[in-house]
Image 1: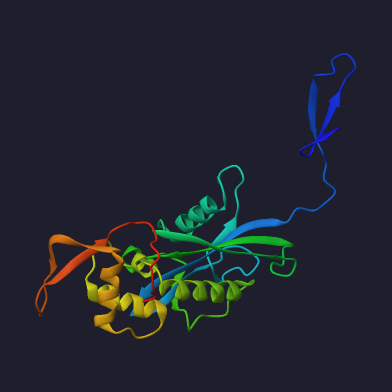
Image 2: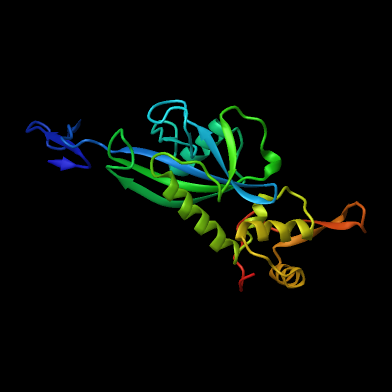
Length: 241
């Protein structure tokens, strides 16, 4: 008798007693991993964070931070992705979302593989000096190994599309920001100019931010009100920005 991949042995002496014996699979198992596209804003440009690979294949080459799923440690692939990001970049991603599953026999020279991919938004204020980690504008990336170029293209498309109808770009900002900061981050994420007055009106209508009482940024001009996200959960808009 078979049950959930085990052979159950039943004896005449005790028909209710079974002893599970693992079946030996005759099929090779695929490699199961996670890869992460990590976005930030530097010098007013949307950028991608890459890590230099320490092991073969493609040892020493810049790639998306990724790694194998640890079945004894990771509760699921999201936990694996968070572990990889923290281990390779040294930070906890404020926003992480599953992107797509890439698979096939040709994507990795080590064999048939499955990669559950994620993208994350990292405020530049969280980035520190980290050996082997480099940041590039998304429109000026070096050649990437495996199928990481395809992963990046899909991640950029998802990010820019979702930025037009949600609070997503705000996760690239620190905890406190001005309306001008938010306006710039939306422009840099979407890759398009946005009318300031119209943007302000639409953002305030959506209720995704709230003014911080008695908090202002003082500079050469009049003090600017500081805001924060009203919710740390992603909020979808009723209409596009």
